[in-house]
Length: 222
Ligand SMILES: CC(=O)N[C@H](C=O)[C@@H](O)[C@H](O)[C@H](O)COP(=O)(O)O
Image (cartoon, rainbow, N blue to C red):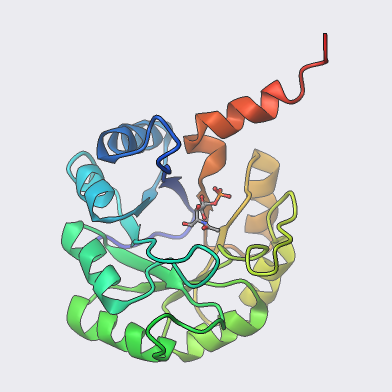
């Protein structure tokens, strides 16, 4: 089992159906490009993408499976979703650990316990607030990530939630992973200075549509 080392840049290789890179072939190429650029781990969604990425790299993979309603708990919402990610080659599982009701109505701790007992991999809790991070650690999460900050209150700010990284790092005795809207080297340094153990970057590396739109939007009108 590959572990997430301190100081790792994790590249999130995900694309939706609206993206020409959607699918395992595109995501495997993205992961190879990220590895060539110095990524120390990959975050990937769904068994098909995870298996394709596992076939081309030995880097640790943080596996997720987005299922159900994106407005609710949908990042690896069940044990079965986690099991599929691990069977495909994930070394760790990330899951929604916000305080919102879970689709199966079961407590988070039960899902984490079962992942530990039956899959034998560490669990990364994707949280939105300090309270959710504290609860996730109490529930047995091995790492806590700021992934969902800004997405449960409908008000995502432009940049990363550096303050949440700082608060989690001050209160919790486990690695804190900074994730969400990290776009620049300065962002990376800010979240690391705030106590991040590892940093996950997605759109700023693996979404050329988003990158193009940002730069196209800066063009002066003719
Ligand atoms: C909120 C949510 O669903 N986040 C997802 C989690 O897997 C991904 O869509 C993000 O791309 C990932 O967290 C990395 O963040 P960013 O792309 O901002 O660097």
